[in-house]
Image (cartoon, rainbow, N blue to C red; front, side, top):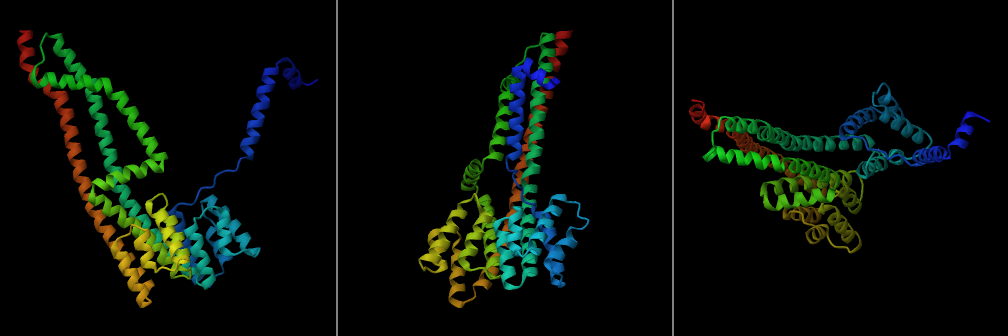
Length: 382
């Protein structure tokens, strides 16, 4: 009998645990691994490279091969290799891209449109241009929000440290010489006592709120909706960014051969987890199945600006819908840029006020008691 058999016989509990562990590993191995989509920066570089090669009359499979050669991004190399194999096996280009699970429905839809129209290189270039614009606005939005949040967080931490560590030492020093705190000094010490009592709860609550916001799209939408309802500038900025996003997607798809109803449905994916998502899908259904004009479907079933429905009506009457969509995209991109600049300036001013307040609180809470009690300490020591 082997040593493992002997061990299992002598220790049945250990054998049970080992069996459970083995089953758990098998279950984990059999569980499908979630595939993560490529980042927009990676996709922009990929589509710009492939688009330029297709424009130079290089076939799609070879373009994928040349782009992946020497590419340090191993997941993308593997995905491009699978796409190339599927294309060589006779699969449609858009289906080959879809099978990787690395690209969203908007991208797949435009690749399909480019393939059917014989303008695949233009589809890739258009996607790269639109996603580059989205990256620009995302970067600006992060710059306008993340940096101020970090500054406020650091200063809040400095305030807590001063109230929990430094001010108690000042209070202990004054008590040691028999000096009695009064006026602003007494208020400063009371603030310190309150901070010492609540800061663990405050920090834990902040961490819990941060985790909840990062994990729950519903909570994020509730908070954003509340902020938008109370801050007009933020509402204008968010609405212009959302409308610019789905309008540019509609124009991109429709100008490359996708019918209007499908273009609207696919564009809804670009504003998923927002009220526009279901509104756009409803408008597409009404436009396709009820026969109502596009401008009427948008005005009745969505909350878009009146300017959009007006320009869509003009486009329908004059058979210039593509031109009107292009003009709307340019208009909302300019508006978004202006709102972003104003929002950044306003947020910078707010952060400056908060920073000055926290620095003043640290200074007053730490050094003011010493300055005010200095004469009393000298009298007590004499």
